Image (cartoon, rainbow, N blue to C red):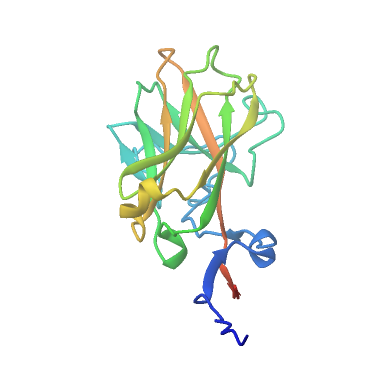
Length: 215
């Protein structure tokens, strides 16, 4: 008896995955204006007192400036270069920030970000007011380090904030990233310092593969 054999072939299924190329992607530095606060150049021990920092925006009326620290305050010097940014007698939420520009300064899909900042505690002050290091996009907070570290007097510690794109933030794709360095204001009549701000992005390109199922 002759029978008919029907070949049923499904449509090719296109699968997008983060393949080996993505897993091996290298982080790319995102440009930050005056990331080590070396502008302006200052003599050792000098500081600015006009409540501004080149490239950065004052937040909530903070008393901010740039300071070329000496060994009495930081025996090992600044975390990077000669200058640091200072935040004097801050209250909670005061500080400074920077909105980034350029293609890499916009929030991307399938990307991971790492923000690192040196947080300092001058030996001239007895207590530490606490800090917040924040990464935002379009004014919306993506991730932060809220005072998880306490630097010893005269020392810096490195705060690290990481963020991996999530679909909940899809409306923010293409919005400018922003860095905010803030105080918790936990101790009055105190000061804190920031230095060596760095932000990298690792983009995870999607790779495609077609699966053909034959029955």
